[in-house]
Image (cartoon, rainbow, N blue to C red):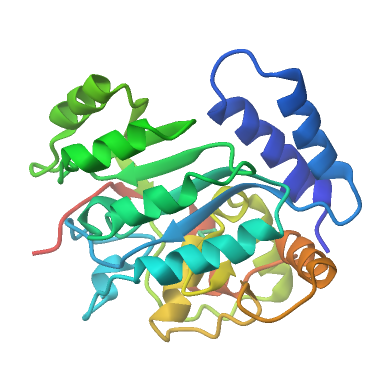
Length: 290
Ligand code: SF4
């Protein structure tokens, strides 16, 4: 089992310092530390919630494999919120809850989900990662603005259909913190075939990967080791049972917490057998498929 300090404690502190703006409150810090050290405490830096596999771009080397979906689908808001509720009812601190797609602003029930996540006191920040091709409605922007701590991150690949400046201006108008993340290059994840790596190699790759610490991803009631793991499993390209934690399975609070802590400190992920991130081969970001 990988160390709790390396995989959970340190990334949680780092994420907390990053997502909570300005001076940190004494009680906020205390709550975070207690959640990290108490027996059966469940605190994690980030959970990405997939709302839809529809995307408004078609990036050739999408790490999350969205262009591989021949029949993309939206997940009903009631289902998304039920899964979030189960996870958060066994959580001390979720430092960042990220709503993602595909593209989250093509998701037709985004307003319902924003309303639904507003009530959780154990979520320190609600984040949205967008490609800025779709400007959300006034209603959605008002709902985002009403969240206590929120953040919009624009992935800017320089694609023509991206309305980055307009999106940022709109966020400023509504008082929504918005950051532009300019990517000229991505690490090439390669194809979806199995590479037959050894367990030792999988462990090395998993423990070095940023996504494995900050992009645990919830899709259809399961939290996966990373976003690629979630999509590979959903597309039927690998068996995700080792890499995932089923939040819908009936358990006591103690059993849930024990199991989830074990999941947070997995030694390796099978998904790394279907990924070349470790090779760090750089490719131009966001190249569009025809
Ligand atoms: S599959 Fe492994 S190497 Fe690739 S993004 Fe996920 S954790 Fe990282």
